[in-house]
Length: 222
Length: 222
Image 1 (cartoon, each protein chain N blue to C red):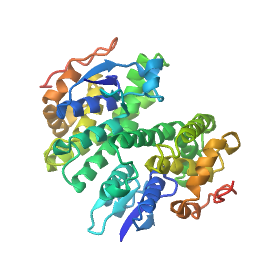
Image 2: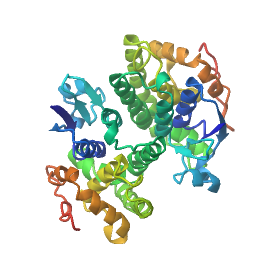
Image 3: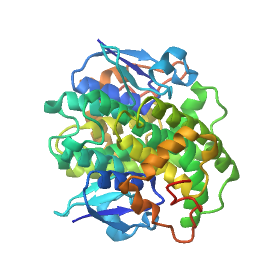
C-alpha cells in the first residue's frame, strides 16, 4: 500500500487526498508536522514540505504537482485533468489560479496568519493580512459562481482536479468559519456538490489539535 | 505562427521561452505590461498574468504550467520532463522547488522589491526583504551545485524543464547583478552551460526599459 505524508492545514495535501480518492487509489495517510523538519521526513523530501507519496517500491513522489500529474499519467482513462489537450490546459490554468493566485491573495493571509502561526508557534497573527484575505475571497467566490453557472464544474462538464484544488483551499478557510457563504449562492451550491462526494468525507471528519472547526464545517447542508 | 505574451521581468515567461526554443516551436513574442490590465489582454487571461500562448486557431493556453505541460504533451518524443514516470516526477519536484520555494525565498524578495516596484511605480523597495533574498540565495546555489555534481543537469542526465525553471529565476537575479557567483563554482559551471545554449540567446539580448543589466549579464564567460 502507498503512504501519503500530509497535513490537514496544507491545501496541496488536501488536493492530493481528494484526487487519490477520486481515482480509487487507496493509500495510508501519515500526519506530518513538516515544519519540525523530522530527519526521517527530510530524507524523503529535502525541502521538508508535504505532501510526499511513498510508493511500494520505496520510491517517493514529492510535491502536490508531481503527485497529481503522476497519478494522472497512471490512470489516463480516468484523467482528472480531462480528455483533450484543450480541456487539460483549462484545468491546469485553474490549478495555477487556485494554487498560486488564490493561495497568495486568500489562503496565505487567512490560514498563514490564523492557523499556521498557531500550529508552529511563530508569533501573533497580523490583523491587516487577515483583513486582506477576507476582502479578497469575495472576488474568487464570484469567479467560482461565474464558472459553475456556465459549466457544470469549474473546468468543464465533469469534476476535475481544478475542483479538488479549489475545494482544498476553501475547505481550509471554511474550517475556520471565514467563508462568507451568505453572499455567494452559486459558489455555495458548487461547494455543496463537492462536499457530498465520498472523496470529501475523510477531510471533514478530521480535526486539527487545538483548533476547533466552525460548527457547520462537516455539515453537508450549511 | 503562435504568439507568446510575456514580460522579461517574469520568471514563468522566461521559462516558457526557453522551453519553446528547446523544442523548436517557433513563436512571435509580444511584450505585455500585464500589471496595466490592458482590456485586450484580460480577454485572453482574466487574471491578467503572463505568459499566455495564443495558438493559430485562436485558442489560448494560459499560465506557465499549462503551457509547459501542453507543449510537452505535443512533443512526447522530445519531452523536457523526461522519458519515464520516475524521471518526470523528479523534474516536476524541482519545478515546484524553483517556481514556488525559490520564488518565495529569493525572487519575490529581490525582483519583487528592486525591479517590479520600479516597473509598476508601486512604492519603495523594502531593504529587509532584499537582504533576506540575498541571504537565502546561497542555500539554493549550493543545492544546484550539489545536484549538478551528482547528475549532469539538475533533474538527471539530460537538460530538462527544471533547468529552464532554475535558469529563468537566476537569470533575472543576475540581470540585477545579485547572484554571488564567486562563492558558488559548481552552480556557476551549470549556469555557464545553460547560458551557452542557443535557447538562451534571445533572453540575454533583451533589456528592460529604464533598468540597465549588470555588466556581465550577457557574457558567456563571467
